[in-house]
Length: 507
Image 1 (cartoon, one colour):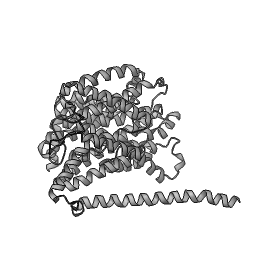
Image 2: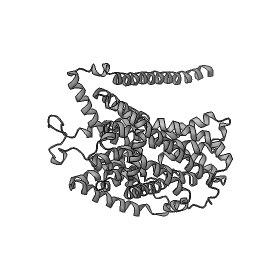
Image 3: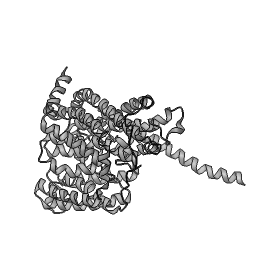
Image 4: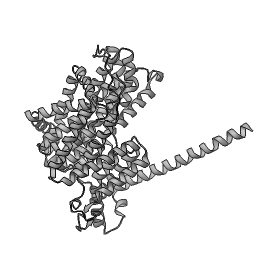
């Protein structure tokens, strides 16, 4: 009953006229940036962080959450109609969604995407509603040694399960950890890596780094591209899927909901991984796998459902453990910190208005999305006609004014510009800035937990073996690394033997 009472409190918060307005604004902005290729939820939330500084904490998080899950809807539209993924998680949708458009079935593809997204998101919100309070009770008992293991696991999964090179991701994570140590030592007060610059004594500001890497870096990259927007010539009709479409998609939607929910809870999990996993699952289960890539509606329904479910369930580790499982949630973590609120096991007790208000707003936001998306698809795709230069100029002005307004410190503006150029270089050279930002966020938590562990154990590392959660996580990591090492050695051995055999057979 407590859950229902608390959910009632959440709905009383979410139905506040101001919060309701910002749910709407969030999902509309999210859908719009999902449609615009290149400007994803990470860059948008980074750009909007200074604006949220002046807002009520609950309202700010509700709006940013709406942008996050709204972008998952919007990314589908251009994936289906133009074969251009508006958001990284929508790449998989291009495989069969665009083929359905070529066959004159764009309407059912967009319709089943919206319905699957709504169901996946709703299933994940229900899971979040009932699972989060139970996990919060367990999380209170988690000690510093366990936190160290969870942080290491999070960094490991982010770097190994990311979409880029593992080695490059490790380099970025190392830089992020290094940057997190800049400033005064939290215990001794000693200056670390400040090089005599007084502004660095407080460390780098997360907002300035995030806005530089994702905001300015992405804007510079977008200005480089000169390709013209494609005209939408496809007529969209019969958006509501037929009975056969529903029958073919029902299993994929059910499996995508559960799969996305589980992957979203894991550190490093996210829309891209869940949509890829769902597509692979549906193709493996299909009686005729050759249909995939040629317009199979299950190839659209499953991934779209999974990426929306995962984007919602990813709020569990953020709100309960204070661990952002992906880069977008790291931005939300930064937004909460800006408001003086630290996510963690005590959030549900200390600020039930934020915790339950955000969850309740997700029910409303999901409903808004499914109502808005189907009739307003034509309006959203017209946004592709807006010139990138106009958007970039306006966004850069907002960034510079916004970052200055937080601390009234011109130094932050230089940090934004320097990291903006750094972010642009990273995009050009194939380095993902995500692990850097996540490591920058997790670094202070990791350092604090490690120092607390050392104080408790008297400087002995045995605490990580005697603590059951820590021992289990480090044990599993060791087994996984050993398995990966052996598998790689076997593959190299097979690769080396194969050419030798061919030469012997040829002789």
